[in-house]
Structures are given as structure tokens and as C-alpha cells.
Length: 207
Figure 1: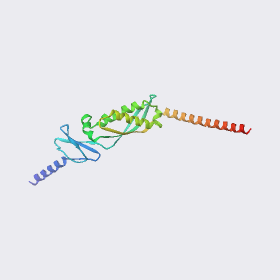
Figure 2: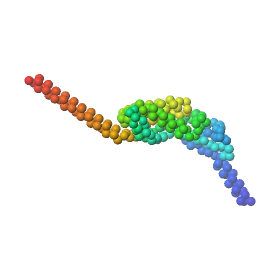
Figure 3: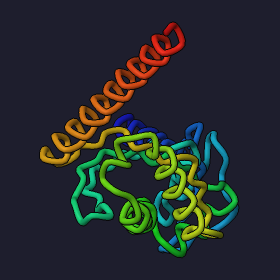
Figure 4: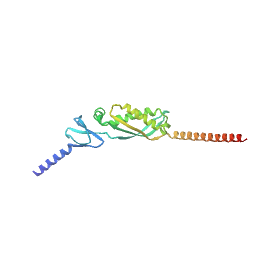
């Protein structure tokens, strides 16, 4: 009899625990009953569900930092190895629509595929050296704007696109360094000629 009571208590306790789910800060929850999303969005805190028929789908609404390694095409047809961070978040009011239309794996299905398309389109308009120069911020801004346009009304906010690491082809590095040396030599020669002209002018005035 005692064993039966103990089993009953354990069963009730287990049922109560399995009926409770926690939505953590930085995410929202949606009840999914027999494959369909039911009810309103659940804010962070404790949520009650029927474990036999319902599961709780959690959707992050905090800022997500997704790092991607990618070979980017350049205007001259080179492949530039890069490491890029995409910062984005989900709009809370669009969480149910995103799960219904795209699914829980929305990052791979939508965010990353959109990023690859946008980054390839933008980078193909720039020379490889531009990705390693002051134009990097321009490229980041254009990729972000293109992603925002492609994902318009889909429930995502693209906060930033950051080119963290760019590796140019070794031959291009040598060409850039050679060009910089030539520019420095030209500037130095121009300075020497200017100095000689001023000295010649001074002597002419003295004479």
C-alpha cells in the first residue's frame, strides 16, 4: 500500500514538473499542439503546458551574433577569404509568423541564405583591395542595407554586418605593397625636386 502511494506521489510530481516550462530572458515561447501553434506569445517566465499534447517552441528575441566564413567574389574575379559577423534579432510580434512560414531553423533557411546572396552581390562591385581598405565600412553598410531590403516584413532586424577578417590572395598582397612603395618613392622624389627648385630660386634671388 505504501509503495502504491509512493508511486502515485512520484507520478503526480513528475506530471507537474513536465507540465511546467520556463521561457528564459531574451526569448519568447509559443505552444505547439499537434503540430500547430496555439495561443498567444509567452513572455519570459513560467509557462504551463500539457506534456501529452503540447510542446513549447522557444524563439530568441535577443541580439544574435552569427559568425560566417565565406569566400567573397571581387570585381576582378578573385575569391577573398573572409570571416564576417551578422548581428540580428527577431521581432517579438512576428515570432509566430516566422515559425509558421519558415520554421524553427529560420537562421539557416533565411538569414544565412540571404546574407550569402547579398554579400556576393555587393562584393562583386568592389576590388579585392577595397575589402582591406577604408572602403570596408561602405561594403558592410551596403550588405546590411541589401539584407534589410530582402528581409523586409519578414520579422527580422539586421543590426550590423561586420567584416572581421579578410585574407587577400598572396600575390595581391605583394602587388599592393609594391604599389605603396612606388607611391612613397614618387612622393619622396617630388619632395626632393621641390626642395631643389626652392634652393635654385633662392640662389637666383641672391644673385
